Every structure is written in structure tokens, then in C-alpha cells.
Image 1 (cartoon, one colour):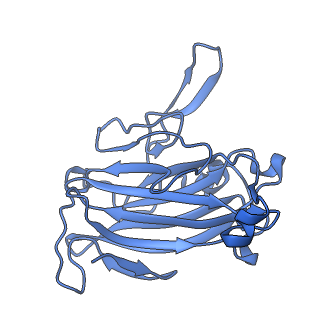
Image 2 (tube, one colour):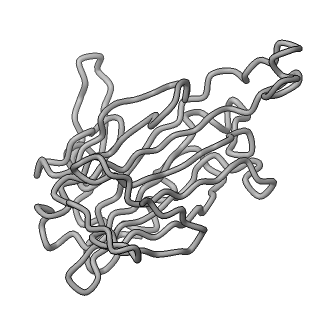
Length: 227
């Protein structure tokens, strides 16, 4: 049975307190969200009066692979796209929309959902935890709102946001949910959770740390060696 976490809570991913064991050879970190309704909101009244969702939100999942010093050791390289645009952080230890698969092949982002529409995960990061090189001690999972500052979009407008861990067999191990609290107003990035090594196993910790900027680069500066 999956565990519903509260902010700051940590669990062992291999085995929970109920005695369930999980296959960590491939773990899916799923992230999902809904936009708050306007003009009556959700539920019966929202349906009756034609409640509509806010404009499209483009939320992006990001992962930082950190070493034993809590730093991103490889910031990757810059490449020039076919459109002539220079993209940095390519094939480094940051997984994001411009560099979706780690060079090791052991962690990757499946794609980009621009609306949060529908049930289930809106974005997924897949990790082969058993195969991850020992130099990676911790993985930080973030979500940012693309052009959130420009569009005045923030996590106070997001409902039913969650991050969950699912093992290879499809069993949900843990879930951490949060909604648009007042503290999330004007916050366009969120550090959702982390997975880290401890005593020969992997731990999952719910974080829920909001940040005002809409780019993960500002958060990455904290984890770069030259910071």
C-alpha cells in the first residue's frame, strides 16, 4: 500500500512500514497537477455555471543528479540547434526539456505535457536506481512554470499537484500531494522531493519548497561547484 507523505517526511523506497517490498530496478517519478477553476470553480456549481480553467500552464519537470557533496558535478555542454539557437547543459547531470536523457541511459524525462489535462501523471522521470553510478548520491526533483513570471502564473493557481514514486511492477510506493496554498502565491518553481542513498538503500523525502523564479537555473546555481 502506497504511503501518503507530508512535507519533510522520509521513507525507504525498498520496503515500507507495512512490509511491502518494491522493485527499484526501474522507478517512475510521476508528477501531476490541475489548474484551479474560475467562474464558479469545480464541483456541482462549477459545472452548473460553466466554470472554465485558467489559460494554459506549461509546467516542466527537472531533475538534478548530485554527488556526495550535494553538487552537480557535470553541467554538460552547449550545442547549437538546427534553428541556430545555442542550448546549454546538454548531456550533463541536469535532466530537463532540452536534455531529456542522461548519457548513462539510467535516467530520462518522458515528455512535455503543456496543460496538466487528464488523470494520472502529467510528466514522468524514469530512473534505474539499481544501475545508477555510485557517484550519484542524490536526485532532486523540481517543477517550474515556463514563463511564469511573464504570464503572472504561479503555484498558488495550481490544484492537486503531486509527486509519486512507482516501482517497476507498477506499484505506487509513495505520494506527496500539495495544492495552491497562500504561501505558493507568486512562486513559479517548486522543489518537490528528493531521492537519496542511505545505509545501502534509497530514501524518498517530500520537500515542497517554493521559489519565486520560473527558471530552474536560479536554483541550480546553489548546486553548482562554481557557486
